[in-house]
Each structure stands twice: as C-alpha cells, then as structure tokens.
Amino acid sequence: QVQLVEAGGGLVQAGGSLRLACAASGSIFSINSIGWYRQDPGKQRELVAGITSGGSTNYEDYVKGRFNLSRDNAKNTVYLQMNSLKPEDTAVYYCVADVSRFLSGSYYRYWGQGTQVTVSS
Image (cartoon, rainbow, N blue to C red; front, side, top):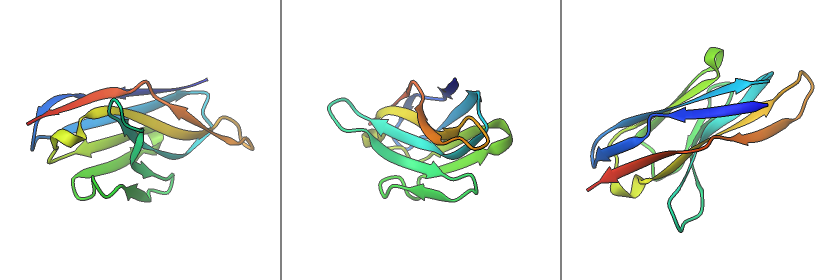
C-alpha cells in the first residue's frame, strides 16, 4: 500500500503564507510526478502544481509567481510554499502522486486525504 500524508493547512489572512507538505510512504519503488490539486465545495477539483522526478515543475496560471513547489526525493516528500494568498485560494488541497511499487511496475495515481486551507479577507 501507498499512503500520502499532508500537513500544513490552516487559516491565514489574505497576503499571508502557508507551507504544505506531503510525505509518501509504504511500498514505493519510485515516484514519477507528485503535486497538488485543490477543491472548493461546489467546484471541480483543479490542478495547482506538479513536479516530476527530474525536478521539472508546472504551475497553473492562477498560482504562478505566488506558489513554489519543491521535492525531496530522498524523503519522498513534496512541499508547496504558498505566498500572497488570496481568499479565492481557499479550498481543500490534495496531494497526488504517480507511484510505481515495483521495478517494472506500472505507475498508479494515489491521493492524500486533503488538508484545508482557508484565507480570510
């Protein structure tokens, strides 16, 4: 089994910062892409940012310049530094990882349980 455990959510005022962390554990041979989605009630889940095993990152336009994603491959952990937060960033943030459990195994997508981020105006 593979588990993704998120930490770092909370309540912050607009303009503030939060740092989310996601640690992957369990039966892991390798992790390809790992990143974050978010979902506000009544809305579809949307991609925030992702990072490949080689360190290439992609950010959705609404977080570019404000959020920074980094990865510690040795710890199977990814960090999302969120700066200049806006009320519209309020959502449950989900960690997602494409994981292979075996040397020649296929990659499967795993999700964390989510962590709430609330930005007050």
